[in-house]
Length: 404
Ligand code: C2E
Ligand code: MG
Ligand code: MG
Image (cartoon, rainbow, N blue to C red):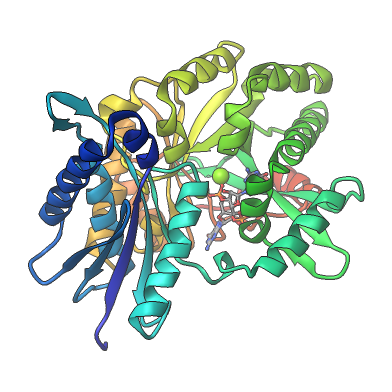
């Protein structure tokens, strides 16, 4: 393998408000404190530079791959969340990180920094205090973005959205325990548009609110239909974006949808990402509890990509931890990721949470997960996300066979 390295683009979250409220001299000291912390997270062969303002660029030399860059990013997020003491004030700050890899995301420094910068914006949109790897689809040109936005505005009225359902499987019994509802957009000219391409636009424009309400209503309606047919659907999981969770009437809207569709709360599971959960602990704690009181379950999605401690997680009434697929996909390849997957399973078991591995594609991964007492798995190995009628057949036919 040739030389590999990674570029991390960091931007402090809400730094402007520190500067505005406490003054520039104070802001400068905070930046110094942040630089010191950054230096403790990297090796001597790596380079840390200030890009201007509250932005930093890190060049990580001799990378073994994405897993290693991810673990350094996680380490930085953790190091930066510890309080800074400045002139007798305790200050907490978080950061958003974008990551690009050489050679796949750019073949020169400028291109790599630009890709990492794009990924950093994505991390901000995902609710801050997290890291994101650069993906080609993030680099939507403004024109394409505007086209997506214009088409998205019509998509709801024109009934271009549909939901696909992906099974979750109990790793002991092989039984289907539920399904995750995943949004699909059938554009009249472009064909199927992947969520990664339009959800960021929907979030940036606020269109995620009406779209998210439609998803929730549709998923609950479908789950109720399956229950009425006597199909053992378990809980239907719906992804909730940060913007939806922040809405003041979020709780009452969910309750209204459950009421209208007649779906009992215990058959609904809401998925939020780790970074969204962490972003506003006080508010989220209340929202989670209010829905938990009527039986709704909460799952933390893409777990392992942010930084949550055991004590932090235990503050919230959470039921499920979903291990991010990046840690599952490299179980066999990098010893490092096997360790993260094991640690998440251990943490979930200690907290008495149901642990679900996402993106399971091989039996070797299943074996690894079972040995570590991971409860459930979701992935192409068992079923792709499929339309509702196909999913109903899967429920009738019974669970996919697990290896002995
Ligand atoms: P997610 O919630 O983590 O969903 C799991 C994603 O992993 C899905 O991608 C699924 O198709 C994919 N996946 C499942 N099994 C495998 C596997 O074995 N291998 C691989 N490589 N991938 C697998 P999808 O459907 O493209 O959705 C991407 C993301 O878009 C979701 O990630 C979720 O964050 C977001 N999303 C999807 N539907 C909704 C929605 O209704 N509302 C919101 N707010 N976000 C949504
Ligand atoms: Mg999900
Ligand atoms: Mg996920």
